Amino acid sequence: MTFTKLLKGLVPVGLLTALPSSAFATANLASDDFVGISFWLISMAMLSATIFFLWEVQNVEGKWKTSLVVGALVCFIAAVHYFYMRDVWVATGETPTVYRYIDWLLTVPLQMIEFYLILAAIGLASAGMFWRLLIGTMIMLVAGFMGEAGYIDATVGFVIGMLGWFYILYEIFAGDAGKQAGQASAAVQSAFGNMRLVVTIGWAIYPLGYVLGYFVMVDASGATTAAASQTLNVVYNLADIVNKLAFCLLVWYAATSDNKNLNPASA
Image (cartoon, rainbow, N blue to C red; front, side, top):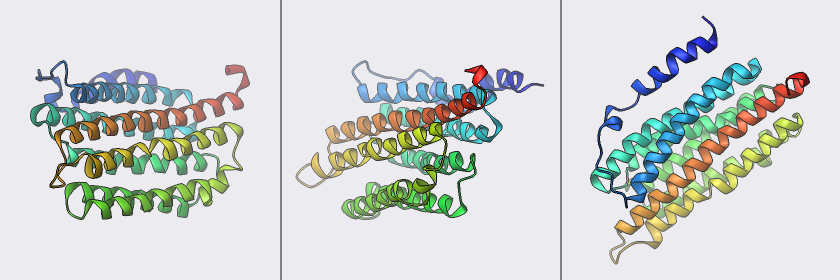
């Protein structure tokens, strides 16, 4: 059986049956619930991107296949969690913090590993690079979750999370990953540079949502208001659609561009 036939047989059935059954039930989604609508739109965008990246695996060189599969995993994991988060929001109007951080704890490390994978595909990656990116990511996410879930002070969680983010930025700009990227092909350098911009500018949306939700839009007792919950979720949803889809599309761009450079006749 060819890879194309395998995808045709598994993608429509395998992906849909893996989603929560509640995603296909009739939900009481109000026409003016823009937060709930954003959850729904993003979940479908992530599911569509999953199918796209899996399909494109057959069109790239072997060294890029793992990177595209990881991109598909990022989008699929996000799609499943967004279906659950949409149901939580529509049913309760509360921020689905636990589901969101479970999603991030799986997808964000995978995205950081993409930096390692695209350099590994051209023989420029090291094991140390892999672990530094992974550790920085986990520090950022665990601190953020503990701050939002109330296990530690929100300010402490924010500060530690920001330090983890700055550590990642150092690694991909001035650290080993950034230095090795300078030796890559033009297509890989372009994709790597754009991915760094996503992690720098796109990821800045997350602390903005955190600040609005936990420091600015609070009541007299310091508790997060309903308006803050809406703002927080809209900002986080916007950040995810930019940072997950755009990031994975840049990996796909690097893979397909490298393929065209190796096979000019196919361009």
